[in-house]
Amino acid sequence: GEDVEQSLFLSVREGDSSVINCTYTDSSSTYLYWYKQEPGAGLQLLTYIFSNMDMKQDQRLTVLLNKKDKHLSLRIADTQTGDSAIYFCAESRQAGTALIFGKGTTLSVSS
Amino acid sequence: DAEITQSPRHKITETGRQVTLACHQTWNHNNMFWYRQDLGHGLRLIHYSYGVQDTNKGEVSDGYSVSRSNTEDLPLTLESAASSQTSVYFCASRSGGGGELFFGEGSRLTVL
Image (cartoon, rainbow over the protein chains, first blue to last red):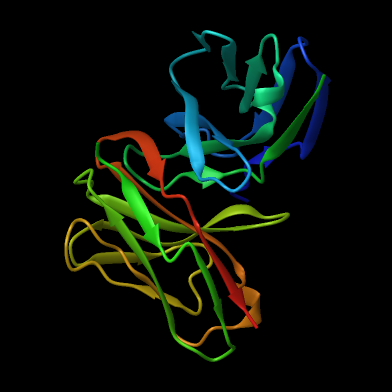
């Protein structure tokens, strides 16, 4: 199949770290993305990683890529209530082509 | 600033009616996409275009059509709306060289 798989829900406390996991199917995927969707809004790009990288860090966000296992994770440090949203993992097989999305992980942050 | 806009943002229609959702981008992107978002399914690709006069079917294209007469616009048409097409529709665009996929704010369509 061509599914991108994610767990559906994650609940954390404010200040904790959040880790959202994703598995993808196509080992030839060249770009892997994390998008965030807040209620009633479109999707906003959080970060992306090229397939030749293992890790990418951007302020509170850390992306880890395990190509052997086709596993991607997003870690959010010091999670805030404003981080509550749906997070989508997506893969792109070639530059400029359509992204294949997972079903999204709903992150709930309690204070 | 460049942007991507969708209209209408909300629409209610009846079964069997033809509906067109507009998408307009000012990024001058060649590649444009339509997705639908449904609970339990995430985002699924409906149709996409890699340039003027180019259109392609995605994963869930039945009952939908698109046309690309210029770079800026990719309207999505539901020929005969069905209740199963009640959904939130997102238009997106990106450059042919890759990089970020930019999304519109979405169009919520209800078919009664």
